[in-house]
Length: 405
Ligand code: SF4
Image (cartoon, rainbow, N blue to C red; front, side, top):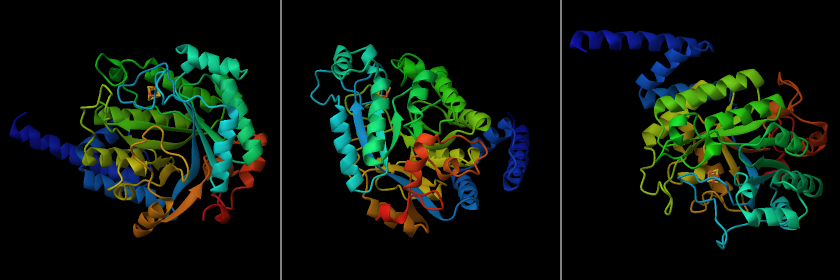
């Protein structure tokens, strides 16, 4: 490209970006190709200004979090992601297979600390790979892992009133339908929609369940069943910015069709000792901030969450990037996926949030928009869950005052 055509190219990009900014200010959506070019050619500082103003337009100066217990039901997994240390291999002493009575004890202890969410986490279909997992289920008299999750979810709900939210990987439509009456929402990270990450030497080489086709199928099933879903992207695992944009556009498309994506987690990859990616470089702060801002710009009506514990020294900056949620924080249990990163105290998060001019409020693992009748896609809350939800909220759909102190 000669100097003249380079100048012309930049001029065209600038004109296109003005057009994109104009459309965004009028709450109109630019074309996919326009927005992609816009994000790729706008510097991070300017993007943050735009994402903040989009967040501020619809926000009452509130940043939310979910006060939870993390129930590490079984940490065996048939897959192996190149960055994961959550998954354990028996006979590792750290492998966990809880009994329903142990699950209930955790939920009861959480209730005493005013938790409202019971996050139930498992590896991906561990019973397909490990005899130990099959024996555990047999001994407890369950045929499948989802049967066990459905049963413990019901017990948690009835005995403690904590609201279950399960993340058990890529579930089938039938499996999700078994959880709908007891789980107010489900979680499943998309991670990224790029199939290149399945290639040899890449992050998902040994994780067939991380094939985007499998994950998208699960997200569609949840939409068809009208189950609110939390999904998200893991940033810095070998993807490009355009992969991030494409993943967010895909999530946006699914949400336009089903209206079921309640929040998107933007999570920074952190290299862990003992994994294939232990020597990989984590994403730069500039790139990560750009990804957060991009999520806010592309997913206007969806909550954007970044976990504070993975960046303990700089997480306040994520408020400047347009987030509106800190995700699940537990006063009781560790982050079993990232145990080396303890959660900041809720008091500290409230202080940092206030310093940025926002108030910290507790939310349920189902967002107010899905509880209140005004959500245009109705039936997200089955009758079986209404009473439990209503017991915990005020008129705003957020957690009542007495549960937050
Ligand atoms: S990230 Fe999830 S799917 Fe991947 S190995 Fe860990 S537990 Fe299994």
